[in-house]
Length: 216
Image 1 (cartoon, rainbow, N blue to C red):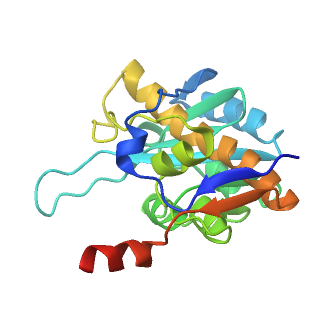
Image 2 (image 1 turned 135 degrees about the horizontal axis):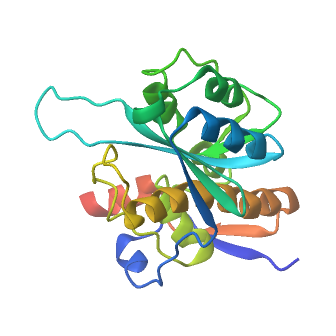
């Protein structure tokens, strides 16, 4: 296997030069109990799924909203669970606590804390890409930077601050949400292979070294 070169840190200016990537699979919006059961039947057949959540942004001091959307993606289909409509049901919580199907996400502490605002979760079977790449010597912590680093493509964050409780969700919201969940799965596929084989090298200064340059 040819050795893959990865950056220790990915610059924002570099990301803006890259072609855009969006999820090209099927997107299924889940907003009823029947749809929840059907979606989970599909997801339980997987060994691993990509994960993310979205919450309606707050623009006033003291304003807070519960997580509105839960995204779970296979390699071919992403399910968007509209938790603001269905709540986080016991059946969904059981899936998130199932250690058999691994869930891959990024900055999981924040997402799981938000989900606990809807249900007393006991999550098992989780992989946090932030911790995973840190062990590989990569300092990137955002999904956009990490995806640009590994795949040389740009994920748009334009819909991030949109209203995730809107009904219906816009096409741009659905694509954005599905892309974030799917790319977590896609990243783990490549990174786990590189990590297992050791066929990669990380180049560039560390965060500390860049800070020292700024000071000097």
